[in-house]
Image (cartoon, rainbow, N blue to C red; front, side):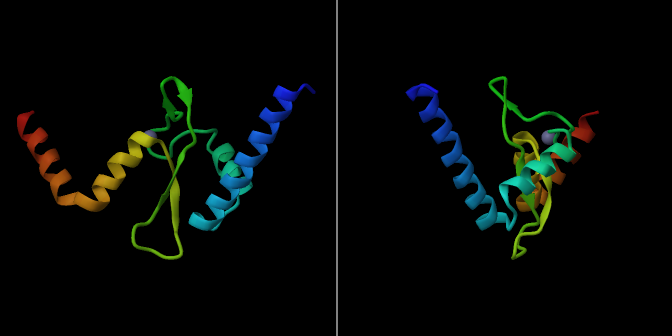
Length: 107
Ligand SMILES: [Zn+2]
């Protein structure tokens, strides 16, 4: 193994350790458990069933938790687009409903 590929492998290992700590601290699960959840869904969003992509590159699915519940209660894994909408629904459901009513009135 040359020096460059050795450093790349070390970086991946460090990132995995940091990600594992992040998932355990924020969601109470290990990185391995997160990756199993992703495999169980075949990498697709629980809502729209897409594979999460940004700039054409697959991204990690986002952990979605029930708001205001501690310790975190995982609702599912979703793409970043659906996460933005779910956050809006959780925080501004009246405004989202008014938007839907507006769109429905136009049709
Ligand atoms: Zn989605």
